[in-house]
Length: 298
Image (cartoon, rainbow, N blue to C red; front, side):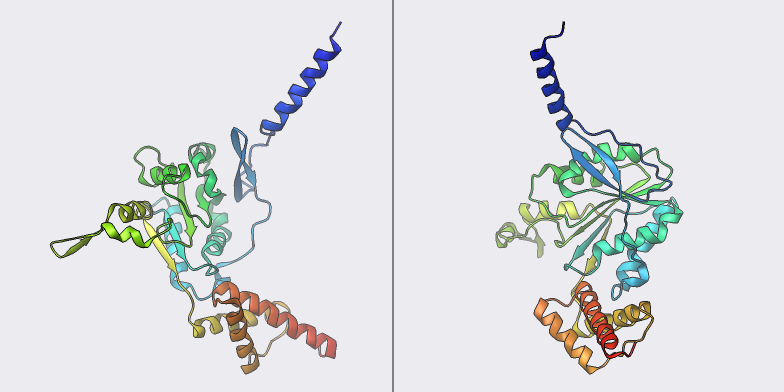
């Protein structure tokens, strides 16, 4: 005879255990999966396929031709088994840093490129992540978006170790691409410069600055993304208006009215980045097409 109370207690224990144990997940088929997220669950983690990757192409990224060339060239070297660098894409928000990584994936997935996206907090799991991909016959970008740290964070230490390769290094089929609004991935304070010294007419940074530079300096490539001038912003708006109009099967006239509206839009947003240009173009093309339909012109 089973003790009903003991049976009920065991059921409660099993139910509790199910809540903390990772759910069974199928092994990823990288033949059909081009991107995955690292998901942390209690004491373990797993790779979860990303079913929908933004279908953005390199030609859709306007105003950042030099940055595109640098990152694409490095990625081509990597795909061809040649020496290549880990990359830090840093700079102003909305300038296309993460979009460039997605566009690179879309452009080169057919050549064996894959992306594993990792949240900043989960960078401590880098050893587990690379264990899951190191035997795969593909080339992986381990991608962490919008990263910033405080000195001493466990994820900071793991990333620093991985980039340095002194204790732990990713396998030859993986590179690390990181985006950040901060050039050195760490907050910078006025007091950081108080330890600077002048030695033989050369400035030597203090310990606080040296520590902050030490992480970003481990990336082989720094790719900077900077605010657009008004002229650059308007040129990107004009190109997007043309692209979106063509996609809708029509031509949207670009004139002084549109230009002034674009300038006002950027002023209200307090930004003139590529993201803002794209958002305005969506508004302008959509409003023009709606007006045409209401008037019976299209």
